[in-house]
Amino acid sequence: MEALLPIIIQLISGGVGGNIVGGLLKNLSLGTTGNTVAGGIGGLIGGYLTQFLGSGGAEVVANAAASSGLDLGSIIGQVAGGGVGGLILTAIVGAIKNSMAKT
Image (cartoon, rainbow, N blue to C red; front, side, top):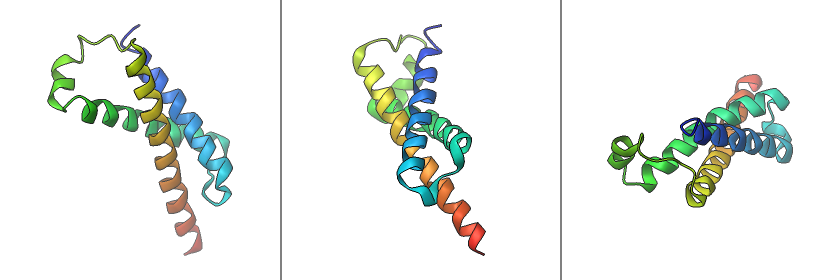
């Protein structure tokens, strides 16, 4: 179960981030479901990049099984990385959707 906790945190924070950007920037909104799905995917990507870049890259791969992901610093990093990843990916997908609808 400990291995799934970081993924769950990243999915939830990404979904929240996606809905925040959808609520603030109505022209980029994909609807509640679209914002949540795009945000969740962005949250996984953002959380992974935060872990990968924050730990020197290769160390993450080598120590992935050894880390529990339950210390406060890593949870905050996963929430931040997931939320920002969700914001960014939802905004990108919303912008692409808008540009395709205008053509």
